[in-house]
Length: 567
Image (cartoon, rainbow, N blue to C red; front, side, top):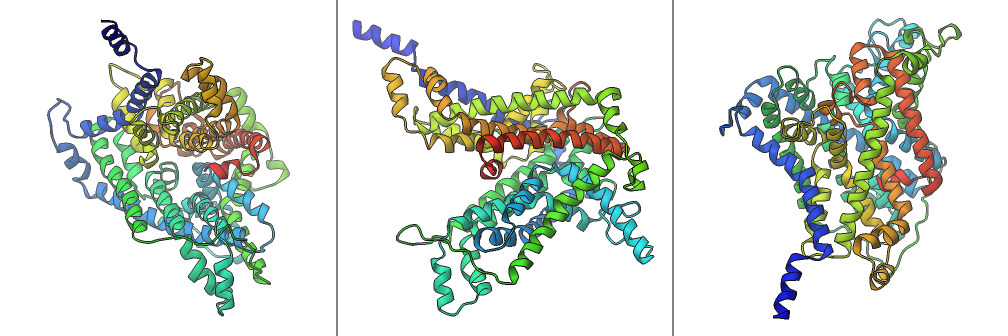
């Protein structure tokens, strides 16, 4: 009888670890699985609730819609190829050679990483607009030519601007791989008569091929899903892409069902690319076998080291220095087209934003509040999931890890439409509220926080946790008093990165904001449509100042390359 009672008590009072697993599973299903499932169901239902494929017919029944998708795929391929050309030589020069100025190159990569893509696009409009761009006006003044030297409002111009924003991803992947390779095989190749360039082509680059491929695929997927730059440059140039076409489906009257159907192939493309990468790498081995960790000696380039430095500085000039300089000039200008002169300098743009603009200060507050809340939620969820997975508290803990990383392969714009389809209408009715934006940002950037928390958990031995458990602490109490304090620096690093990327997020915010919940990114996009580049540049300057302050704080606490190590 007593044994039977104990069994009943055990059934009624499950293990705390089980309750935590159930709660985390429910949260991740709500944030990740539910929006995607809802998106699929909406795409297959008519507004009356009947099953139908009419939405797919409407989404792909016009050639213009099909061409938009094909434009995105072609654009993404070109962006990935250009990014590889930019990044791989830079990564090789920084990691393997005696090129001078490596700290400057790190600063360039970090600058390209933190400069929001839509601000970079606006900078290049001010630089390479066919009529009033600074570069073209200087070209006409010097040569007397009538045609522009460069035109950002072209397909290739759009691809180059996006590549300037994307190459840091490939640089980080490739440099990290190069840093792990010993110089022994390169030395052996040199002894056997291979020159420096042949050794690089035949030995070094093949060893880091998985990293090049992985970085290129991520850039491809980011380019397919990017909204800001294709909208700011592509729409005036009449270059329609999949993301701008999705935005048009949200113009009045809103056609969520058609947008959902149009988004499904983008998700399938993403999954296909990830699967293709795994299939390609599964068939080949990429292992450098040495008895123990080998020495990495920098390759002496001789006079070529200045050519390598020149290439890196050229990429930095085009990707960071020139756009940032022209944005800074425009933010302090009465009229940006008049150029840099004392009578054209003013603080009026900043004063207007801070003291007179109806919504500027509220968007700044919204951006800080939404980003902080989503970063906190993502960090807490990531820590709990990483704890359950790494400590193997339940049998199917790996499912939690899969759900936490799933948004990594889900384009942000698809996630946003899924949230709109799931939570905009009753019974949730969250459209235009802070809640839906915070939840969407949390889901969007959860993989960043989870990858950071998982790496941190791997450095922490469970002995102290076990001691706390022996002394009577529960699981949550142990996490709060032992695990989290020991990992606070790593967790803060993950929190800071999520906060920074959330402040610049446009693809998800543009579909979910309401009149009172606009963010700085959305306001910047609205200003770009109005053509008010001086005030726009000033608002961009405020956003960059906020970002740089946070990055400097992270460098002070966590090291100068904390963002690049966690990217």
